Length: 217
View 1 (cartoon, rainbow, N blue to C red):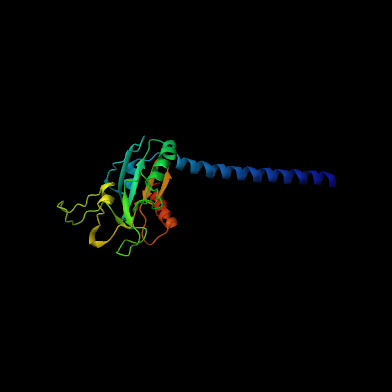
View 2: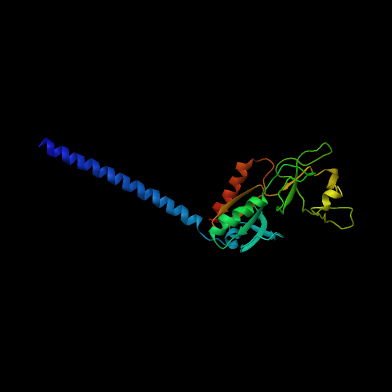
């Protein structure tokens, strides 16, 4: 009688183990499937606008295979949105585009601290004669009063800006010319790039993008 009970007990234990493994597998694949479903979802620019994003303009840079590219503002901060027709393109060409537009390099020539394909630039850094500090800086495409006979537009040409040593307004020197956008994230078929705040680090900037992604989703 003891041997029979021992066999039954062993079967019960084996059955419980199998059931436990089965439940774990269901939970694992269920969560993974939900994650992939979100990552593979195709979003439109309207989805981003619906999250509170305000479109302001276009890029001059050509982004191959994109559906649309815009820059604008979300909660007072400039954000660029690059839309691809598929998640595959976003994770390949989009990743390259994001890296190119946020590429920061060491200054080796005058005050150039950005990669060759960065379009939106900002002045950051310190200088004895005055400069802009922090990660936010001063955008180089802002409108301001000038004495060059061009009204309130300060026009910057990437090559001639340094040759003529043009100082920016209020006697402050552009110490480092860096990418405006410092971080980017890929979400489905979207590439989202953002300018940082002067008071936050890289992780906090990324958290801001995650908040936007949550609002879009």
